Image (cartoon, rainbow, N blue to C red; front, side, top):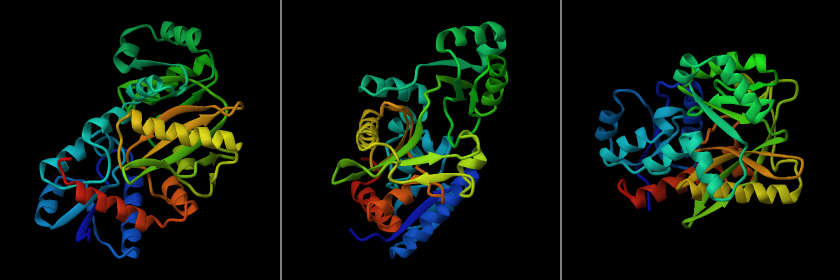
Length: 319
């Protein structure tokens, strides 16, 4: 199928706007290099009117954060009849909610760190001291605290001392009303992109994220090329690479995702991948896995995105 004009949607109003804009620009340039007529749209109040006024074959959603990954934008695109790359709205929501996602991938046989979830309201109304003590008794220390519905390491902390846990929860609640507290699993963080080819999910080479001298939970380190080291394929044993790739495909299927996704895991000393989360709109910045994994697999980012957009256009807006 020949693509006419395609939309790259980025920006929005979430805390991840800056990263999203960078992803959108990268997608736009990559598609132009592949010979695709692409237009960049901001996900603002004028978006739907602008899309209605243009002849759009399909849309690529590069919006990170709530509206781009919880199914809201996908629903809006369906309502105005524009096909899009990525999962249906319901599947987006399943992946966006880390608590729900952990339950689903556990049922599918994946390992995930032990966890509890605490709401901001419960934290306010119950005794924080008692809650902290109970969390320590249940999970031990250290733990990782992060918003149940957010990304890009925002609001995320490694807590090694129980006295630091209340402050970590308060910081977390800045980005969401539900905190996910996970038992910390030491190991290497790996991210794996899954692309559907001919209707079958295929894992691209997993990448390892190493933060020498910086916190692995720092937003600045995660998106600054001079503060992070990315190795692809990841420097772990071959069996661990295979297990990580298989886990990403399992997560993709368990969450009902389509077209593409990214799964993050921690690989421990035994080579076991522990599921952390899945993303339906993988980033495209200079420290993002998708462009690097595509290159490692011998594909250009532009042709990969163009193929996904053609699939979406052929599928139509209601499929």
